[in-house]
Image (cartoon, rainbow over all chains, first blue to last red; front, top):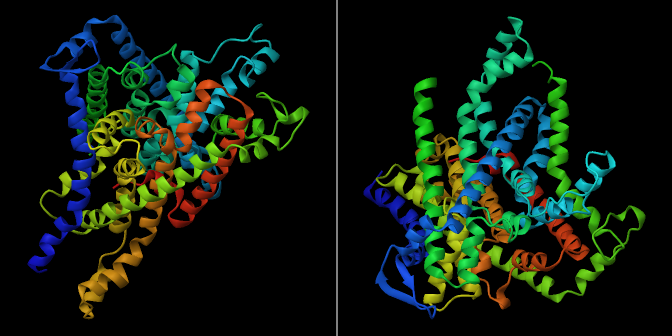
Length: 286
Length: 264
């Protein structure tokens, strides 16, 4: 290896790194710094530095409510993704190679289909005249259509559908490291399949489930298309409020403050919480 | 390996129904002969597919999205492929930092990226232009290419390259004849994944597209806000078919499980 080779990696990676800094770093600093400026009555951005936007976020019940709603929705979506994603990941890991390939297309394929299209499907299903209502009416579970559009249930359902593949992928990654002989050992000692699942498999996949939960939570908190279409004006979340502040009310400083809080939350969850989990489970398992 | 308990198999089938239902419903509604959203079982037709041909705005938006995604995926690859090779094949100071920096667009919510680009592009006078859109998308999808290139480049046996070198091949020849061919599937898979993600992007694009640069997702989103009719379903059906064709390509190049589960 000559010295020429030692500078080569820098030449190779510099253009990409500079592109990210110039086209993402600079715009982010430029825009999020807007949150420290006020807005004059004419819609002009003030020149004096102030924390009034953040004070507003904390004191105004309107914004507090939106953050609380976003938090609750994201938690609900995370829980439902755990409930359906973890068993599904386990099933996938146990299928024969051929059936797994087919199932992967079914399970992961929707991940690549446009979120707008998937949400449209849910809008059609959830409407008063939609299939879900017709089905519930037919089996007599309800006597009149329940409104699922613009409801928490609707948003949680549609967002879980959009995000559950991430949970499956994360859980599946830890299932692949799982040693099936421990399961066989438990079976040979006449443990029931439920006991095996609860006592042998679940403890080993918890790190995967936790990191999947973090991904799902972060993506649910920042999702835009699904809450905008299914939740609409009635169920405003942080991302749709940012959209309104920027494009409808043209209050950029306020929108920037909302965006800054959202970003800090998401980055915190994806980076620091993830690291904390890794550290904790390294001690447990190695 | 022992058999799957029956209740898990039942769960698996229910789960598959859950995943497919919204897509299936869209496809079915597209074949209705009514003027409103309904199932095609009491009257099917292709009228909503022929209706697409009369909507120049959607057709233009489709081509625009294809051009945008092609440009963004290509620029992202130009930046990410060399960086990915550096990260996979060399140990250098700041390697982790560079990797984290290049993956960081994945962490920023697209809605935040959208307002950031809106302000940035307005300041440099490029808001609403195709160039602005391509650059913004290129940064947003760069991590997808990077991850697949890094995993393809770390995945093969380095001793082949050493063997070539020991037989007197120059480092350029080793790169061109040995290393590059081995990571081509990773590059192709990454490009396609970047293309699909750029093609479908909404939350970022909605801020920086002008009426003359509206992409297909933005056009669809604006349309859904007003009304939901079978035309939306037929356009979405075309999109679903288009995406599945791309998915099959992805499967061929790199394997779907590896692409989506690909970690670096």
